[in-house]
Image (tube, rainbow, N blue to C red):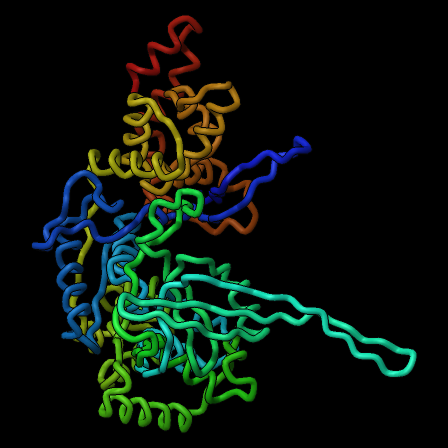
Length: 514
């Protein structure tokens, strides 16, 4: 279940109309509660659901080692396989790694089936994904003026020009800007463009700014600590910085973070960087990539650029075919290969496009290159803690006995099914005007929305009434729906027993059965 959170400030105007200013739009997704791997400095998992991570201590330790090696630049061209049954947190661990690495390290996510739905060859789709995961930090020195704004004085004059009977006039702006550091103070004359740029950035006295001499771009760094007592000029997002020292004009190193794929697109399309906003960039010639790689290597040798190997995460990797696996096997040998993290929930399965079976549906020669991290099923206590974290993320108040019942449902059915029940149970509680989800809300949505096991039971019971039914008795036994078709979980038995309880005793029986 996913939703959208809106946060902002609400102000009432003089006319009685409430105006809501949206400052943040946050989507609640399946893994939006993940903030990192939840490890301490010794790479040991913290307890209590740190950074949204619960359980999988061994897998988190292993990925923590990978994180440290990526962060120190000691790993590249390596591949890690996250293998485990469905619902054991493989994608959550990958998202935790992405959050832990931060924004400076490229992290690209894709599904194994995506390569077959794009309007390009499979190898081109994988190449673009790999190059999106390789960052390039381009270092550039530029001359800037940096200082604290002491005063801004703007004068407006009327200028007129007469030609015969016609007259033309306009407003001409001129001004002066006073900047200072701890050592000096200087006054600069301003033209119309600089005045407009200062107005656009809402620069006032007390702000610390930088002005690029080449482009005239103005950047507001924050507010000077000397103005920290100006409460009327403060806001929730106000950032205070020290007044710059030394000369006003100085040479400063500027870092531009781009990916190899962005450089490819800019150099292979006529519209340049605007092609990045077009969506599908099409196939890029290998000659263009070779020239870019040579140039990046030249910049690196000159000290003008730094290569940052990122992470490419491919979920459901068993959906790739032999051609894709062979390409990945070769791509990992490249000098500028990123760290490849793949995940699958398959056991012994056929490799797509062939009749050969292999562990996890991956060829043995590629498996030999992988560092395999296995995930284990969650325990009852871990499922309860995960549900508690999700309730907090979705802003749902739930009673302890209801949370315990929901945890038992997650054990008997699946964790994903239990997570989906959180928001639906919250809506059921809201309908009966309750601020807290209770057992009766859980049982109500449990009857409304069936899990896979109950749906399969219904399907097997009425399979002959469905169209295109090809399931025979042997297949029914394989699904466990033969002689044991009448077996039911404890939660389902308790739910069905509700009809046999008198209305006065119903609430007590709910608590007892849970």
